[in-house]
Length: 451
Image (cartoon, rainbow, N blue to C red):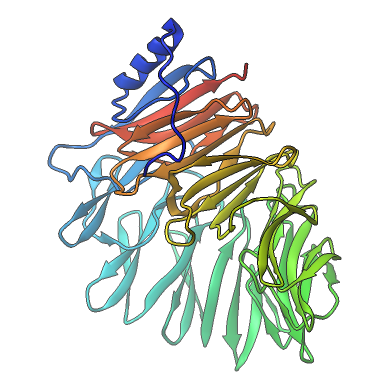
């Protein structure tokens, strides 16, 4: 994609030239803009080399939590195959590749031609004829949990490697593993009634239930539940349970039930006869025709969301409309720690604009990046909220990029053959990601300093 603004000319300072050379050593095939002292050091660690007999186009990279193992997908005539620790596997990959939290195990969904799908765990393939394997994930102890769908019975499988437990129901809905990989939850139908299963507890006290959402530490779970014709938002923490006021429906919008990162605050959308309410900690923020994408700042002190009223869609921050100047048909939203910076990602095809907009809520200043975020991923902010980064992809999908943008409005864009989503270190001084360049997979770590 073309940049919506004209980039400045390269600066000819020695420090800039030196960093440009380091980027060229990495095999960057694109451009680096405005280097200045923003990125003061780049280190790289070689993770793997892609053999010459493999297709060059890498479509996905997964690194184990401890960084010692790497897997990537390479295309073939029949689909994509996983290369794990340098060894290519025969099953055709048909779902995300996962490493277990303890780094010892891996799993992915595979396609069995004309006979359904299978689940692969550490090279062992379990086939389910005429069934579709749905959601899957690992628990902390390395147990693989997955479900089958679009068939009867619905099965939830807990595969520890040494043994396999199957729980059979009339139907199974979305399977959720909490962020700390300690708990699982799902909706199932049993004896003609929809029930909620949390770990091994079956909650049958409601007429109907919706998909559960866990807090970041897994100690709190929220879910929609119906009783006597009304819907409620139920939150459970240990043995205590809190129920909202009744609504016609819960969770009508995108990502409509969300916890703050520390898990102490919750926002959700409740539908009434007057429209949709955005509710924070069980207190109404406002009523609109529709509400979507409620998003907390990292410290939980601010909330942003999209809402439509009288046919006009607007962005709201802490209940107050924020001037945007463009139609916000966005695919993701992110918020800095102090609420002063918002990033709105516009995926291709959902708006006349495709790319990322950074909005300074204090001055209403907008900065536009014409590089669509990969897979509608939201941008990430450093812990102090001063630096934003995101993974983008060019329109022809031939180059991926990492865009780094600080509040000082200097930015750095680096292109690779493939790149994973960037992450910041807890102190905000480093940004890391995995990139493919010239048939080599690297872990990139850049030191950041704002001047």
